[in-house]
Image (cartoon, rainbow, N blue to C red):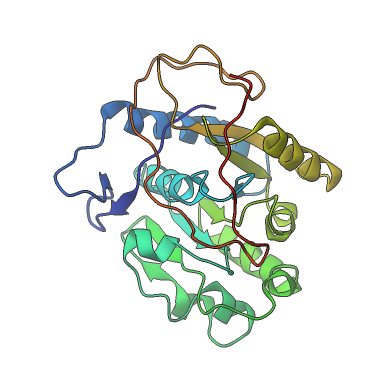
Amino acid sequence: MNMAEENIQVKPEEQEVVTENKGRRVPFSVVEAYKTVRTNLSFLQSSSNSKSIAFTSPEVSDGKSTTSVNIAIAFAQLGEKTLLIDADLRRSSVHKKLRLENSRGLSNVLAEMCSLEDAVNHTSASLDVLTAGQVPPNPSELLSSPKFKELLEKAEKEYDHIVVDTPPINVVSDALIVGAATNGIVLVVKEGYSTTDAVSHAISAAKFAEINILGVVMNGVSATSKKYGIGRYRKYNYKYGYGYGYGYGYGYGYGPQKESKDTKK
């Protein structure tokens, strides 16, 4: 799978993808790229009993949260009831992208401080969002608890699709924990940023944990690129011409993340 990404917000009534920069229109190719990924994931889900899909990335700033939000919107645009869950309990960002309150969310539900119904944000007729909630002292323990699996099981009875945003897989174990409770993970990488070693390490970690890798989404792809440098990816004839506009600004307690470029182009 191959697509570009853009910082977006949701219009609750129209469920349209828009940029954070007012007045800037989203290229048609970007919208179509998200729809292509949506179609691919729909085919994968049709052969599985699970409706939940986790999104992660090798490192920070690869674009996995923006991709998660856009894919959830893409599913909702079909009129299919969709739940977007922010499971990045250490440093959430979904509520910022969608301009939602985050006083209660997933962490509060798992800690039995409120119910799922009370924590869910109904942004439109087809799209509900469960933000991360308050930062807990034990994120991994909450996500690995039976409560999280019970939450997903309950959600799958009410929704057609559950999209789960998780932390970077090479930084903390949370993505592996969530991936094991879902149909599998989608790995989001960024051209010119994600290194071969980082991607290989992420794939190896998922395979070692026996987690299904549903596919790879590549962000920031230029139509003029002849090689990707990270495995073999099919090139789509889209020209995006822009990069990702935000970063986490934290290191999950591991120290600052160092930007690097793949030397194999």
